[in-house]
Amino acid sequence: MITKSYEWMKTYLPGILFVLLIALLADYLGSTFPVVGGAIFSILIGFIIRQFFGVPSFLGPGVGYTLKKLLKLAIILLGFSFSFSQIASVGLDALVIVIIAVISGVFLTFFISRLAGLHGNIPLLIGLGTGICGATAIVTSSSIIKAKEEETLYAVNTIFAFNVLAVFIYPLIGNMLNMSHHEFGIWAGAAIHDTSSVVAAGYSFSNDAGDTSVVVKLIRTLLLVPAAIGLSFLFTMKSAQNDGVENKWTAIKKSFPVFILFFTGAAALNSFISLPENLTDQTSSMAKFIIIMVMASVGLGTDIKKIKATGLRPLLVGLISSAIMGGISLALVLYASQ
Image (cartoon, rainbow, N blue to C red; front, side, top):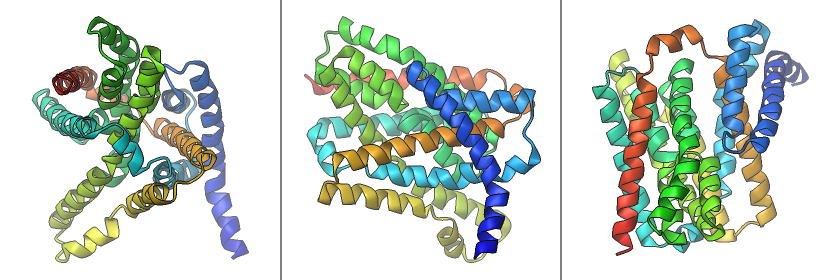
């Protein structure tokens, strides 16, 4: 037992500690510049280190462990921040708006990406990031469909450009249209990708709008559960068919994202027991920090030559699809308020 623990620490701990140091720096920068956020700083720092200094081979196992294993822990911890009462507090209209916006956002982005000539996993990743919950959806989906590191990085950076613009543009549009605090909160939560940008835009409009936007964003994030299960099913069936596997259901059981069930269980626990707020705040903070570590792993594993080969089309697709989703969400919110 001691020998195995020593071997594990020798293999994985150096890389994990290296990622941890990057995450600490990124988290500090993110708190200083909240418009950008710690996750983006983390992925950029990791990316710069990889390109200019390289990553020693002895750090590789720990970096990979963070990306594949710790991400699942972060998703489970996020579950303790959700409760069914939060969903009920924003009303049925908000729930319907979120579902329509997410579904249309994912499929329209995928369709636009294909029209733009994008291939591989990038169209799907950009679609999920745009429609559901930004970088968290992209990295979670990447682990399920076995996407390449450069595909994951490109998808994250694509939606980042919209996040920055949304923080400034959404409040301006909301004031121009004389939207109520509740209306703006639903719109921001349903259309803006990452939670940090939702919070920045919502609370810059008003405190009430900020509170509503956070709850709506949480509802959106919950849709990651059926999305992850569906991706696992489709990816496994396709892989089993290509590999000539006869028992496809056995393959599905082996690759099923069990951590999503733990996420759902954590949310249900908080719904029925109502866990202490200080506990849920701590689990949420831990999850967000681990996600920052995961982003560092993505950056450290990305080759700039492969990104250059992809071109600028994904960035343009991300901006177009984000604008379309923002328009759809706005139209739904204004229609529901009539």
